[in-house]
Length: 204
Image (cartoon, rainbow, N blue to C red; front, side, top):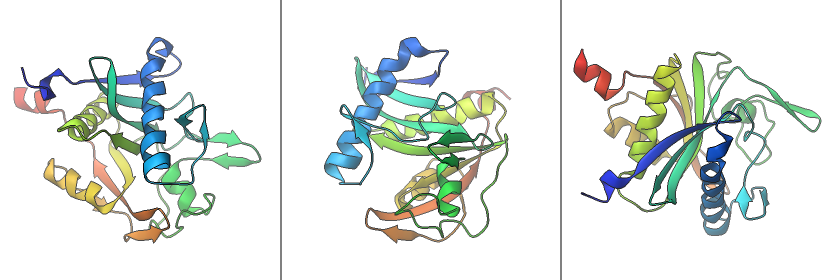
C-alpha cells in the first residue's frame, strides 16, 4: 500500500468533536512552524500554536494525518457568521481584508464586496508538509463536506499557485480580484462552485 493511501483526512467540527481537538492542536502547531517560523509572517502565537480571531467554535477544520502525525490542514467557515474580538466585529478573512480591518493585508483583494451568505463558505490557512497528495486530499475532503452541508460556493485566499492547483483538480475558479502583494508575499482571492463528490458523480 502506498504512503499516499495511508493518509486519513478528518473533518473536525467544534465543540461537538472536542475529542478530536488534538488534530486541530497539531494543525495549529504546523501553521506556526510554516507561517511564523519559516515564512516569518507577523502572526499571533501562543504556546507554539498559530491562531487568530477566525479560529472560533463555528470553524470547521479539515486535517490530514498519517500514523498519528498531522500532515496538513485547512479551516472552513460560513460567510454569514460574525464574531466579536475586542472592540471589533469580524466576519471572515477575505471580507475583513476588503473592509480594511486587517492591518497589513491589502484592501484591494476583491473588486466587489465579498458575499455574506449561508451558501458560501471560506477556506483559509491551507498548510501542508511536503508530502505528495496531501493538499489535494484536503481540498477534496473540504469540497465533499461543503456539498454535504448544502453549500454552493467556496472562497479561497492564497498564493496564485493555489488557483492553478484548483484548476488542475478540475474546479473552475473565478478570480475575485487581481493578484495583490504585501511583505508576506503575493495573494489572490478566488471562488469555486462546490461540486458533487467524485463518488456521487460516478454513481449517477
